[in-house]
Amino acid sequence: MRELNDVSASSITSMHCGGKIECLLEVDSTEELLYLVSTLEEFFVLGGGTNTIFRDGRVPIPVIRLGQSFNFIKTDKDSLYVGSATPIAELLDFCTTDGLSGLEFMAGIPGKIGGALYMNAGAKDKAIMESVSTIEIIDKKGVRTIKKQDLDYCYRCGGISPKATIISAHFLLDRASPTVVKKNIATALGHRKNQPKGYSSGSIFMNPEGTSAGYLIDQVGLKGFKVGGAVVSDDHANFIINQGSATTSDIRTLISIIKKRVKDAFGIELKEEVAIVG
Image (tube, rainbow, N blue to C red):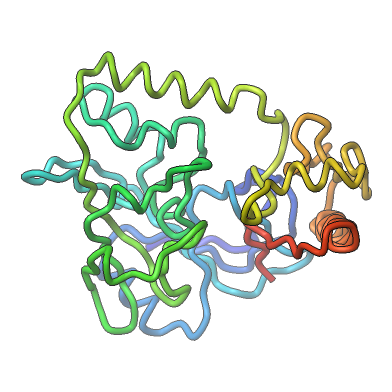
C-alpha cells in the first residue's frame, strides 16, 4: 500500500479543480483493500477521476485508489473477467481483437470499469450493467460476489453501496468479427464527436425522463453563462467547462443557478450525475 499526502485534486480529476486531498491510499491487493474498508469509518473510492469533483480547500476524507493489480482482462469460460481498475478503452481494444460484442456503446466514455459499473454508465438507450453477470465487491463483510439480478441498479446507478468497493466483474458478451466490433465502436465514437473539448467531468446532470438535461439548459438560455472560471459549454449545455481557473465553488454556484432556472421554467428538478466530494 502506498500513502500519498496533500495530493492536488486538480491533478487527478478531469475537471482540474479542487483542493488538497489529505490522504490518498493506493492499494495493490484485496487484503490491503479489505483492511481499509473494514477499518475506515468513511472513505471515497476514486476511479479514473472523470466523474468526480473534490471540494476546495482540504479534503479530509481518505481517498482510496486501486492499483495495477486490479487492472486485468481474462477470458473465463463463457464470460470475460475484468478488473475494476481497467480503463474502458483497454477493454474495448481487447473486445475488438478478440471479437466480442456488446460494449461498443461505451466507446468514447473516459474512466475505468469500476467507476462505470458504480454509476451504470452508458449511452441513451444502453448501460453497462446490461452486459454484466456478476460483480465482485469488498465491504465490511469481506469479499463477495453479487449476481446482477440481486442488484437494485437503474439509470446511472449500479446499485452498489458507497461503503463497498467494486473489484471486478464478469461480462457476458456476444461473438462477432473484429471488423463488426470495430465498426460499432466507430459508430459510437461518431455520436460523441461533437462533445465539448477542455476540462470537464462530462455530463453534469442526469437526463430527466422524456427529455434531456442539455435541451432544458439550452432552453433557459444558459449556454455560455459563466461563474468565475466555469462556463456552460456552447457546444453542449449539459457540460460545464473549466476554462483554467475554475474553483469547485464556481462550479457549485453554476450548478445551483442551472437547477433553479430549469426548475422555475419547467418544474423539473435536475439531479447531478457528477459526484462532488466534500
